[in-house]
Image 1: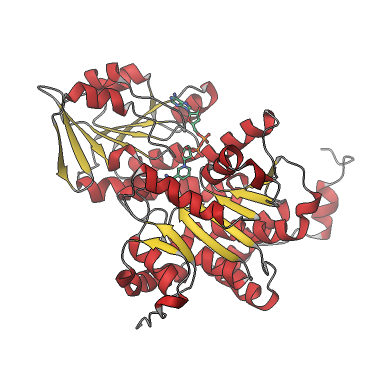
Image 2: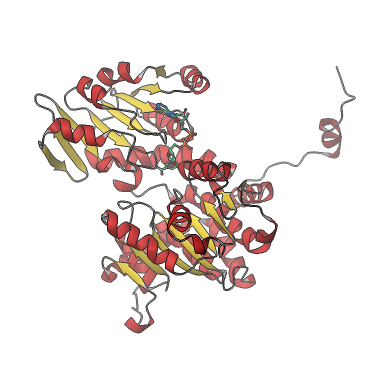
Length: 429
Ligand SMILES: NC(=O)c1ccc[n+]([C@@H]2O[C@H](COP(=O)([O-])OP(=O)(O)OC[C@H]3O[C@@H](n4cnc5c(N)ncnc54)[C@H](O)[C@@H]3O)[C@@H](O)[C@H]2O)c1
């Protein structure tokens, strides 16, 4: 399609890298939309019913094609949306341009922005005085609570997309520090069972391959963390023919990994064994100085957890004593003297830093949960306490029902006899 740029005066507030990239952005956003039938159905209903009329939404999410379709859906529901990036490396500049120039949505995001710009962009979103926050990692909620306490009472409620953000919010609620309710979209079954597992599993492999083009078959791969994300990565790596070992701190998860057919090791055992290391724990410094010292020449490291803190990068930099060079796009080599270690995408989310994030078909469900949770907040915020809520079961079930329907798959209803049977305690052998 040909993009007709709006007259400059009509552009929404923005800071993006290149408005000229908008046409490419539109094509890629429309391509993603084809894989997002549930969100499309919600958008069509929102256009008719306008459930978010006049609501100021402040969103801090990865600026990808799928997010653009969520922003369009919220705007179709009547919301005034302002978006910034939830990670300095995950922004797709063409998408940011299209949001501003074609869809009329305020957007502050440039790929590779420095820390000051990242926080300036968050501040620009907070300046719009959102009544609904939409976070991926809790940065917007944190900023409002710490730097703008007067604004806390203006917010009806928020939504949170990822595990790490939910952990931060639950800590705030436990301390009595959370000033408004938040719906943990990550806790919806139609989110973490699919997005964290299949979405991150596939897109992490995608990011590693785009960055390195290595052969995975026969390679020793260490996955740190056997949560939803770690399970997805491990099963996809196994499917590509890698030998996979898991490092864990939770005995139940470690046992599960073992019975799923993976090796289980300590970090110390894994360091000299592994050839490719992928972290997905949501924790800090999983691989540290002593582990880098024990790794093989040529080992590759990547992270798929939310923050770039899972590998002790300051220690790695120190050990390299300045012998650091980019060897391929998105791959930096640290020469430790006689041994070279490689880091993908600066240790930030590899699936977003070196690839395009989750496939749209998976984000369809995650973002359907976001859109329906926003509608729920518009209708029910007055009834909610300052706590972290799970997505209402009815929304979860509706997202799964719509997804199956969009895929043309029907399932059975229980017969009357079956309903009576499963709710009775009188039947025995
Ligand atoms: N890359 C993406 O697009 C993407 C998508 C979804 C979630 N995430 C992020 O991925 C991370 C993991 O999410 P999840 O849903 O799998 O969480 P989870 O809580 O289900 O799993 C984390 C696992 O890591 C283990 N762990 C914690 N500390 C560890 C340590 N020091 N060593 C080894 N294992 C350790 C925990 O026991 C747990 O089993 C979070 O930061 C989340 O925000 C990223």
